[in-house]
Image (cartoon, rainbow, N blue to C red; front, side):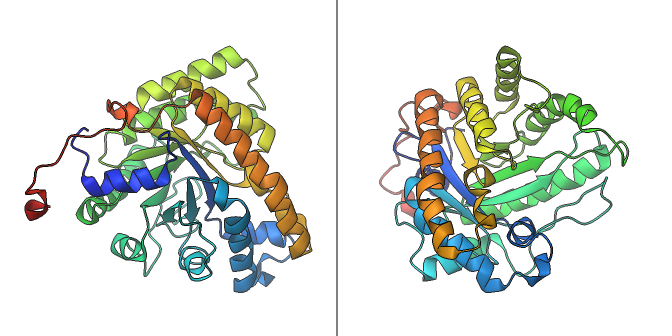
Length: 331
C-alpha cells in the first residue's frame, strides 16, 4: 500500500482536510431527492429544481466540507459552471445509475450510461464513487458485483484516480421480513462485506454502520462492532449516513471514529428537513445555519477521534516514499 500511485495520493489529499480526515458532504441523490421534494408527485420535480437544491447545498454547506459528492446528472458539472463548488473542496463524483437491475432480492449495480472514469478525470474530479448493492451471502450475485468493482478499479488505475466503494446491504429472505430481523443480521452483513470487498484494488470503503440504533443501544457493544469492522477492512474507511437523523448519525460517527474510521460522508443527516421547506430562500437559510452547523459538529468529532486515511495504510504523517528525479519519464 505504500506504493499508492501519485495521482491517487493527490486525489485523496484533495478530499481530506489538513488532518487527513475525510469530512465530506453527500449530494448525489437523484430519485430519493425527487421523492423528498415532492412525495406525492416525484415525476413533477424538474431538472432545474434538482440542480438548484444541489447548488444551494454546495454554496451553504460546501465551504465547511473537505470534499463534496455529486452526481453527473444534476450536480457535478453544474456546480462547477455555477462557481458553487468551493475551490478547497475535493470533488467526488458518483459512477452508478440510480437504482438497480435484476430482482429486488438480487440487485445488480450498473454504471450510468454515457458516463465513465475517463470523463470524471477530465472534469476535474478528485475521485469517483460506486454505490454497490451487496449481500456477501448471495455468492453468484456477490461475484458479479465484485467483478464490477474490479473492472472499475482497473479503469481508475489507468486514469490514476481514487475509487471509493459504497456497499449497501438489503433484505432478501422474504418480502415481509421484519425490520428487527434484518437489524439482527446487519452486523454480520456489514463486517463480512468489508472483509470481502477490501481485498479488491480500490482505495476507500464507504461503510454502513454495523448495527441499527433502533434495536441496539449498548454503546460498548456498538463500539465493539465498529472495531470488528475496522479489523475486517484492509482499506481506510468512512461512514455513510444512510438516511438516519442527525442525532443518530452523530453518535454513529463518534463510535466509528473511535474504532478507526477516517471520517464520514454525510447526506440526509445534514439536510433531510430542507426539501420540506417550500420557499427556496427559507430553505437556503436552513442549509446555511442548521446544515452547516451540523457538519461542523461532525467534523469536530472526527478531529477528536478519527484516524487519518493514510495512517490506515501504515503511512506516518502522510509522508509517502520520495520520488526520484526521473519519475516523470515512467509515470
